[in-house]
Length: 453
Ligand SMILES: *Cc1c(COP(=O)(O)O)cnc(C)c1O
Image (cartoon, rainbow, N blue to C red):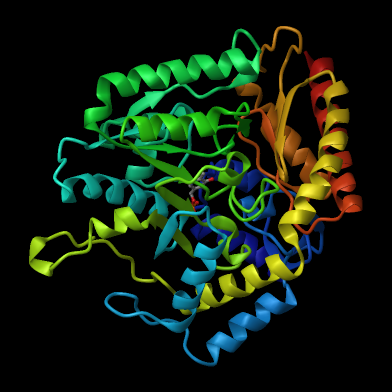
């Protein structure tokens, strides 16, 4: 039996994959063996464009010389020691580098190991901040409808992607939800009307409940897992203003949007917003190792700083918090951002992506295209004029993405929204090739379906 076949058998017998119906996996299994640049290779020797950056992580491509080297160097010193009550060299140096590039006003870095844990930490910090300064009534979190912040219980409590979260409702804590400006699905279809209506809703929620609200959490500029939904201009800065006005901490979840993804270092930079708390993850290590962080302002930090017996300590931590290998590769990642001018290059190539994606709009079943930098969603619909979605049972997004795999490109859709999130170093000819694959796959799958019907 070939090695590939052996691995296949083992994977079917013992593995349980995240966000995956294993019956689907069994029908269309895939085992990655290696990666090089913006492509990955499977155990049968097929190559694929990493069209979703291995789920929104990758920046400089796979097997990047400098990143590999940084890990090896660190490995010669130590792989891991704890951050509980002590620190280490790369975690310390990285905290300074992160604050240098973060929105002005953030000054503290609290590490963890995934986006979801960074969000848990943000929620607990926001909650405890008000407890520590004697305003114990402020306990609730406000979140945006359709938002996504990770899969742990706290993170899903402030998330609201129905499909993922519905079944766990009895486990979740209550949070206030406020409408998100989804322009394409708003009855007016007008960004200004849609934005103002959502802001009105938020304002009245704040008027009625600000005294019981600790914070508001939002994915700045673009909701990711909720379906790649971009905000109309001016929404984020207005949310910032309302939070300040009503004394509610603004938590920006930059786990997906951070590190150049949207053509700015952070999505908050698009509207010159500084959150009170910010979560980062995914691109922080260039897509190499699981490091995440929660950043806060000095004001929040100071509310926890006291003599021990005052019981203001933030009692939270994870085994691998501040892991040296992870922080070492994150440091090298940030050096490469500067050296290779990654953010500037995404901003520059963004126009090209936008023009090329626009050509997909001509396809009969492409309803909407939403893109900021290298973060894009293509919403497929059954009827373009009425915006009528496909029947969920048809799993159109899923089938188009499988077709893309046949054509040599990996991605993962959200329902019928196709995802295009290539590694930030992708060059124009590769971007073009990936968009061509998406176009062909959409055409082949949606047209074939019509014949069947
Ligand atoms: C991916 C994501 C998370 C969760 O990060 P994990 O590392 O998968 O736990 C949180 N927030 C946003 C906005 C994300 O896109």
